[in-house]
Each structure stands twice: as structure tokens, then as C-alpha cells.
Length: 202
Image (cartoon, rainbow, N blue to C red; front, side, top):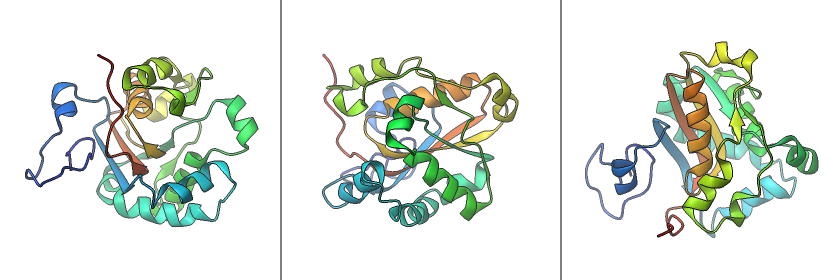
């Protein structure tokens, strides 16, 4: 896999190899890992947690995250979930990423702050965006670190938790925001990742 973003390779190019995207445009986050590939075998359970109140999957997924994120957890000071905007949180009633981050906190003993990062403006679902460029545009400026949380972020290595990594646009926006607030490192862990990115705009 790519040593930075975790994209699976079709063959093993050797340790510490980077994918073309990370070589040409290094991301704001330092390392991203996922427990499984997002495909027909995994997406049913992930969507059940995300949209169908199937919270019984949370403990299982948290164990997967702990296993996949073990090297990152060792170096993390703080666990932070990718936030939902308050309007979406009210309609969905819970943030699946926050639930996973909280379970990971309980398993690891690492500090957890569900309010270190907030979604400052409501955006359409990333699933509605047709391309990488559209997704990046959609989340540009969507996140911020509240002033009262800057002190806890400054100098910290942050483990950012989300459910699925598709193009990386959301975690890239979150990582940039955390780095601007003074985070030393931003690691990312997701349940799953899409192995084939969306087509790029030309």
C-alpha cells in the first residue's frame, strides 16, 4: 500500500512506496490507514451503522480500527472524529465517526475530544459530488477548530477517525484545519477505503 494514504497497490513495489497522487500532491495528513476495502462485502454493514441505527456494529468496527491503527495509535496524543454539521446531526441523531472514536478511546486510553473540530457550514453529501475536484470544493472552509480547543490541538499528534475514505477530500480539509491550529501530526483511520478513486476533472 501507499505509505502515506494507504491506497492498495496491485503489486508490492516495496516498503515506503508512495502512490502517484501522494508523490505529485502530498496530502495535509501524515498517514492514513483503513481496516478493509469498501466493496460489496463491507458496505452493507457500514451503511447500516451510518444510516440505519445499527449501533451494534460499532464495537466490531472499533476493534478493526484498533488493529489497523495500532502503529498510529502508539504515536497519537488525541483522538478526534470527523464532525457532522449540527443540522445533519439533528436529523441523523448521532455521528457514527464520533461513536467509533469514543470506542477507540475506551480501548486505547488515548485522550478523546469530540469537539476539537467542528463543521462550520452545512454542505451537500460528498456522495452527491461527481468528481474529486467537486468534493474538494464542497468541503473547502467547512471545518474549524474552536478557539477554546486550539491549546489542546497545538503540538499534538491527532488521530482523525471517519467511516469511509473515498477521495480523501474530507479528511484533507480536516487535516489542513488541524494543522493550521498547530497540530504536529495528523493520522487518519477509517473502517474502509475505496480502492478506485473517482474520475478527476480534466
